[in-house]
Image (tube, rainbow, N blue to C red; front, side, top):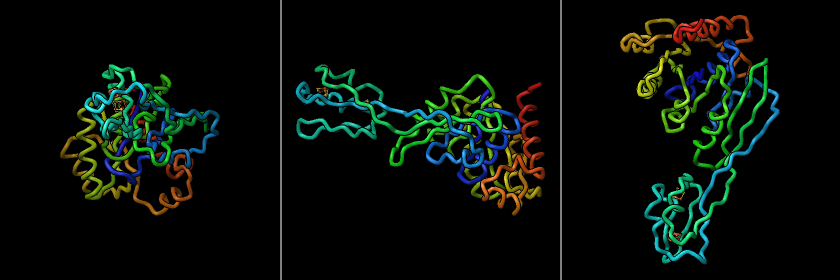
Length: 276
Ligand code: SF4
Ligand code: SF4
């Protein structure tokens, strides 16, 4: 059972919900926000495994290359260009699709490996925590996200998705059985939530919304959910104290004042999924 937690925009409380729900459900925490994986700052797991992530990129053997340009024509990602008769490789644009090697009749293309980041695993409070970390300057997060998600256990997994609705989020959602969308009752929050809702509906999986910084009034987020007939599965109050707990890097679930907030969300999730 994989539950993706996403938000149309960054800074709405996606990691707050993901980390605390992992504790409330006693579920594995998977941080796929590989450009800024900050869930471990709160969960503080003891990291016991680190694996590098490598991707392939083409290496031209110039003594075999005839300069025919077929590889350039067939690269959909502009990772190859031909300058006079020589092929130049932009390794960071390469998606490791293998097309250039297939079309090269001179067998002039081999592959090299580039280290693009790592995966860390550890444990805290008996829950397993995994995060992907993309190296600074690397443009492609998807290979790390795929690696993190393909190694998930057959268990309850909370996937802390990247922010936005980019292909990084799409790749995270491919593994999800359910989604939690985190929003805040502001015009910006709703604008980006609408895109996230559209995306999740394309995947045709059950989903619900958690409103962060909720003043419980008839706010813009509540009105949107009502109009769209979307379940509100939880609400985190608008509170200076919560902001202070967060800024100290503490876990809200461990504070008796806020534990019930996440226990209620956990119960709602079970309802949405018809768990026993
Ligand atoms: S397809 Fe092969 S031979 Fe042709 S330019 Fe590319 S590497 Fe060289
Ligand atoms: S492997 Fe694919 S993306 Fe990379 S250079 Fe070759 S054709 Fe382009």
